[in-house]
Image 1 (tube, rainbow, N blue to C red):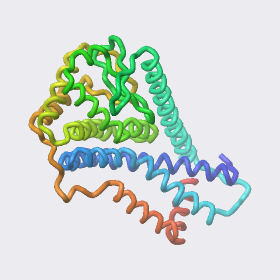
Image 2: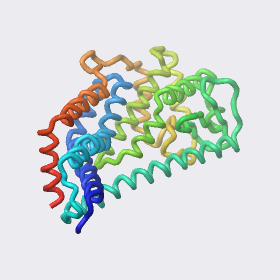
Image 3: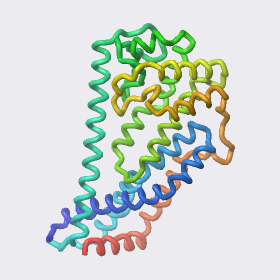
Image 4: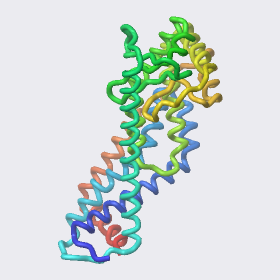
Length: 318
């Protein structure tokens, strides 16, 4: 197909987004088991950050490569000719790239919309509790519904059955657990995950959710064995209630339908296994990402690197 200069740039950008995202996703999937084992040797909060960085890496890396390497090399070295032929492989990759990113945008938008309507409905039908560190909306019925809802203005939604099942100490432990999720911006991180396209990364997402719950448990317990026991008992009491309607995907529930994960959390709290990680694992994954971005930034300033990227783009266009 014959394309004009700006259409060729758009086609190449979309094709590169797809190719880089797919390649990095496959690499991370191959290394998923090792990454999760490494995370298990970290402190829970650090492990959650590490796994979140890995889950977002394919999308961020693809955007960075296109904006930092592909586009500059094309604008610098590609002659401004009227038209040029684009190969079938490039066109197919561009269509797949556009579809991949559009699907992610639609998925994230729908999830955010469902989260907004869920919070508004709960505020309309529920009763607001007294002064607490986090706004609490109690709704009649609902089974074992207790979740942090809202992306930026979070609130704790709790069913009347849950409120009745917990004693004051357990109730406070649940509030502090959800407050930990709020302070970590975990609902916003769920939105980022929905927005970032990736392939075969379900293991990373599930592991991140597990470690984010462990991190919230640790912050709620604050090293106090009594508070840890109160939270463990609260988890058990809530899990024994009848399962109600699931909250939206951008809400963080206290318990899920995964009995094995619940048992692991309860055992971990009762055994007070909240010790920090070894010093060798305290390096932030974001510092590693910043270092990698710096290397790519240096490559952007190298004419030889841009010329090499342009040769790859020319082959992709054929």
